[in-house]
Length: 293
Image (tube, rainbow, N blue to C red):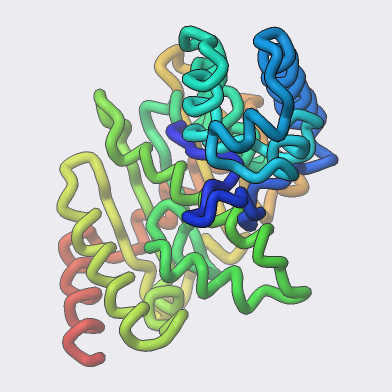
């Protein structure tokens, strides 16, 4: 997935910290990547005979930030690596580390999910308590994170927002995967973030629904026999015929690949889609909600 990440370069040149670029100590792979990159930056700087203070001045960053990056305590932004490559004359070797470093900013669970979504040719998603993350506007997701209890720190919020935004590249893939969403009506009527944020979220859904490879259906609140009471369902299918699925109400919420277990999830999701409004009917309902707001 496309990602951005790293150290800060404010206008005053001090390189003061920015939320969201700390290394997650529980992410062993991320810690190793950032430590390796920091070590390479330091070795290159020392190889050209430049002190940390001199490099900081030449690159336009604070000396404290340079030490944090080189010691593996801070994730360097792409522009930091590009500037370091230029100042230290690395010939593109340091700038080339941007892709791996960028992924580190996202929590491991999100990276794994993004990797699966990036390789899927068909994705089916049912969400019953919030609008699904892939469908959320940035304002909407921020509003959700801000009311979480216990409260997230600013750094945690920035980290999660960036990760969720990066996953939206699944809509732009070529060839495009078939994306199917079923949303509970209640999730669309809840004015998360206030009326204007809510309106923009509904407008966003209408725009996504215009994409040929995207299907958005609404499950009416007043339906009597509902097969989605077990909670969220995700089913991802891949080019080689394999699949992975997950449901809050089955198999302890763990991802499953066993064909028998997958058939259960596919059956439930199929029945949910059959019960929901058609995409055309769902679009009309969303437009009606906008008209009523």
